[in-house]
Image (cartoon, rainbow, N blue to C red; front, side):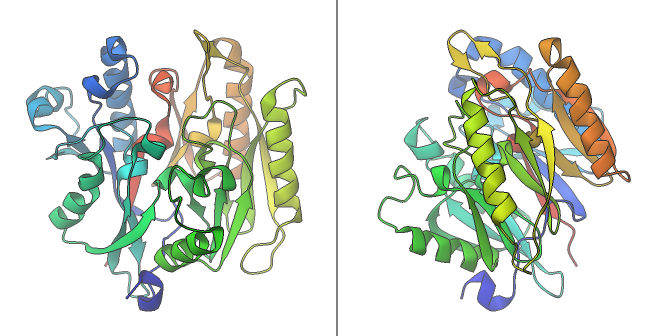
Length: 342
């Protein structure tokens, strides 16, 4: 039986966490392996920031375990030795579920490294089952290639995603839109999917929604917008705004929409960096927000103000978003929450 039939549901990210998982970077798989020291410092800073709010489990390769452990003194950071290829745990990790009795389970999606972009990925595809076995969590194997960064839920039956990613032929070419939608609804137990069109310009994940929009609460969505008509993100974000303005959620509510201005256009060599404040992460009592400095200082400040106003009861903990962005992702991409359960 599938999760929906057993009344398991993916909870919203802002619900209480038992812990956060991250995977430690693997130099051999990095786009810029010469940046390994900078990237690992970024991951260490992130883990320590999250540990200010809740326990953290770092997934580490066996050969790196002792060296990584030596970087931490925090009592609520622990380590789990599991071989892996890459360090974007949001995308290859499990998606956790809860039922009405607050018992935990999880979806094990198929993983193919964002449409086969980064080989090998065989170890990453096996991480989620090992996590679930270690924590003795009931597992549902989904017949669908999917990454956690491609979906957001409101916990009340509505899911946000993009057509660019979920319908991309490099994921599930044998499945129709209707079949993909039915699988998603069955495995995370939602009633309605809001299909945005595209993700941010230059995003090599093929448009993950966690860079462009997320739920702030049921009936409330935050979206990153571009105000420069000459920027490719202008048409993309304006179209997504219009979709949200015309949409209703599973309960029939129109959305309250909160806008965050995107950081300035930034390149490394000839590659646009996918800078996004929407790649923030909810933690217990707080939010971990990537900021970018330099020409982005003004938009950094605005983003922090917007989130502070939207979440007055949460501490906004900023972190250097430039340390890992050249590798293709940021805070939300590296993390996966395990909800508190019975």
